[in-house]
Length: 212
Picture (cartoon, rainbow, N blue to C red):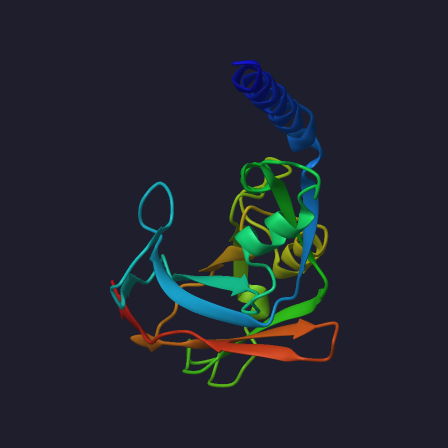
């Protein structure tokens, strides 16, 4: 009987320490994961409503030409479960539970130098294929707004992204909006993201059929 009571008491003590480990340990489980932009994807968006939404249609109104680019890291080391578990305190008897409660921030190791956009088809009679059209676009960054400004110049987007921590997921989306109505019936563009490691991500958009 004494052995059983001792075992129950020991188990109770372990449970208390486990609870304290959760209570005191979790706030300390905040860590930074290094990521590098090395890939991008692009989709068309519907900009005719109150908020832009992803669209599978290639048809866009002349006054609402827009697309979304997502920048992300394709490497495996940012895997949440592995990285969070490795950062948990080794003496914790509930290391797995501790790890799952961690708060992580993805921190960019590569910085953007510039974003440039080129026409892959004639935009107007004056703006031809291969012309740079960067100044004809404004942008909106997903979950980022530090002022009353809705849209940013691409130069401001670069500055914002270089000071922006990626929370919860190692990717960020940017919506691009053409500010000049095209006269052409078909459009496509090519975006160049120049990184400070000397690499350039080149991202062509899908073809856009312009409707009145």
